[in-house]
Amino acid sequence: MIDPKAVIDPAAEIDENVTIGPFTVIGPGVRIGAGTNIGSHVVIKGETTIGRDNRFFQFSSIGENPQDKKYAGEVTYLTIGDNNVFREFCTVNRGTTQDGGLTSIGSDNLFMAYTHVAHDCHIGDHIIMANAASLGGHVHIGDWAILGGFSMVHQFGRIGAHAFCGMGSVINKDVPPYVMVNGQPVKPHGINSEGLKRRDFSDEQILAIKRAYKTLYTKGLRLSEATEVLREMAANESALKPFLDFIDLSDRTIVR
Image (cartoon, rainbow, N blue to C red; front, side):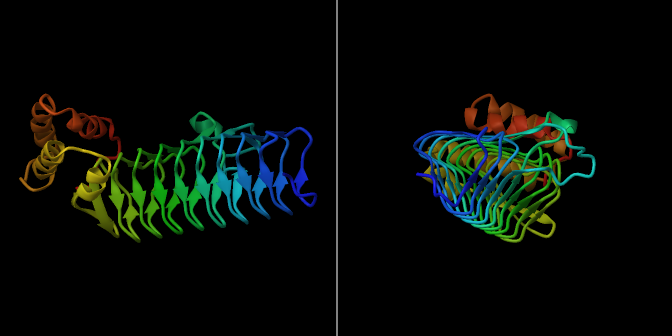
């Protein structure tokens, strides 16, 4: 059902099972999948593709131009998967041509009120961004990560899968998978063991991850030395491979 007070461009592609509230504006490049519910006063524009069963609350702004001074009106893109929730005043910007032209969001994510996803970010699945958490441009967030309220991630930062960033964190280095961080700037505070239990990690896997954390953070080893030890540990425990791969790929270096 589309409210007659909504403003829908005729070129938008909207499934017949989409609900759109009053005073919402949908632009010409937008494609919206079945079951999606869009509240009142929402703006969706640009080359934006939205999957099934998403929900957009009032006053969210989706697919707006990137907040980047280099942006000069190029055609860029935003893709959103299925079953995501965007609460009040969420802002999600499209990509820039300096980084592939795409901002992407996976499925089953929760973006609470006032959260911001900047241009060229790549968001996985099952992620929670609490109220007013903000991502700079080009940030990558792994599956199941949680960002506490008012946390901020510097541009080009990376947050690993299952990581937990506490309220008000200022994240200027990469956060490896499984690790909990907090502070301004952030410091490591153990692993997200409760989250791993909820996601059916075995006791043996969690113990191996704790040992890997201690190797990296409490034994006084240089990063290169710790990485070599982790490589040996990962040969016997597959849960450590994402941990090691993340460190190997980190350009900015990790939180330590």
